[in-house]
Image 1 (cartoon, rainbow, N blue to C red):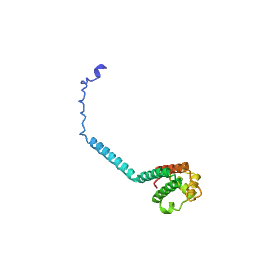
Image 2: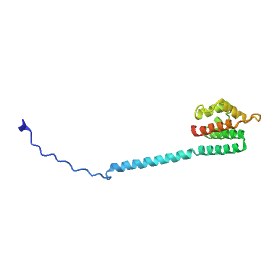
Image 3: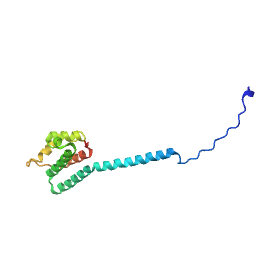
Image 4: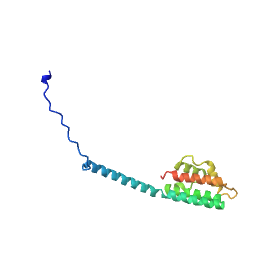
Length: 159
């Protein structure tokens, strides 16, 4: 049986293929990578500009907080924090939807548009207290409310 197997010539190794970037696939891959990087930069810049109002509002709240701590006008701090949130809501959700809300409906709206259960009924009472001169707002209440507003500004859905 050994005689029936034809004699094969010796195996010849092919020459190695040189690695170069001259192949058209590399140009396509390069174009895709450049496009992806430019697209990423575009979305980062757009996100930065779209969220500029958030940074400005938080900066304004921090300035109001410093001023309230210096003058001990905590009702004014709560009022300003509430008005900043109201202005943002009017801009984003429309005047008809956000402007008439007060007390509990306003708190429900803030919880619905931001992180759920951030605000409580005690916050509605604090907001009500800024319009009642016989009620004094404590420092910690005002600071807690302002922190909740800052958190809402950072986390709310922009419609």
